[in-house]
Structure formats: C-alpha cells, structure tokens
Image 1 (cartoon, helix red, strand yellow):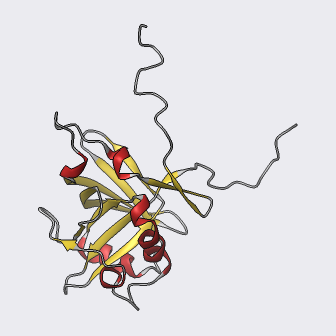
Image 2 (cartoon, rainbow, N blue to C red; image 1 turned 135 degrees about the horizontal axis):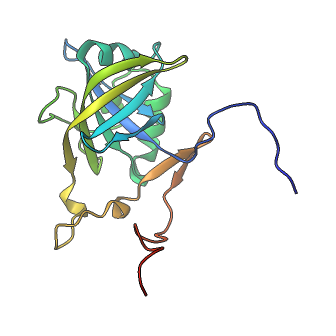
Length: 187
C-alpha cells in the first residue's frame, strides 16, 4: 500500500468552521461562514480569516475593519452551512436562521448569542493572497457562555459540541484523548 501524489492543495484538515459576523457603516449586519480561520499569535492575541473579495461580507470588513468570530456547535450546524451558501445581499441570515445579534463590547459587529464563544476582532492588516484576502486581526474581547462553566469557573467548550470542517463535510469534534502535556506526565 503506497501513497498517491496529488497536485498542491490545502489538505490541512479538519479545520475550525466559524460564523463571522460583520456590520457595515450604515447598520447592515451579516454572517459569513469561514473555514479559513485560525490563531496567529498568543501575545498579542491575534487571529486571521481569509475571505474572497467577491463575497458580500468582504466589503463590510474592508469598510469597518471589525468582525466577530463565533464558534459553531452541533446545534448551529444547519445555520453554519446556510450562512456559507446564501449571500447577505439576498437574505438577512440572522432573521432566516433565528439567530440573535448581540452588541459587541468593543466592535460594532454583532455577536451571535447562540454561539458558545464570541471573539471580537479589529483588523490590523489585509494581505491579498490570490483567491482570498487574509484579514489579520487583533483580538480585543472574548465572550464565553456561562452555561459551559463549572463550579470552579472552568470553561468546558466540549459540552457545547463544537464542529469542524473537512473536505466539504461538517463533523462533530471527537472524544477527549488527552490533555496538554499528558505524554510526558509522570505516572
């Protein structure tokens, strides 16, 4: 049994799939589903999202330089897909998917109330890369849903049943296999 050689492509799967909420200067709000998203730096905390210039949210992002990354869950899987295939030019995704916009603390883009974690971001640079432009952003606030906190105030995202994206499929995150450093812990 060997390995097939494929043409160069993005095979870094699975990926986090997030709903990114944006707002325009004239009060427009939209949600775009993004799989090209990730952590860039710990200090200062930074993330990146990559968006095609022809997407409706792209113009809003360029206009305001702000967005919110909203983590997705099993319960939000249908809305996650819908917000990725329908254009905000044609439909109000908050209304259609019965999602609740909440005001941000720092940015004007709304949070999605149903998401277990909302990450408010301010763009520091836009990098044209080809099919997508990368929005490099500083994290300016994080909101965590208290229903996933235990009695010691520890956050348990796994209880929200986060989902990931792989080759066109949404997948539930798996079972706990270990915790950071478990491979070197003394028994």
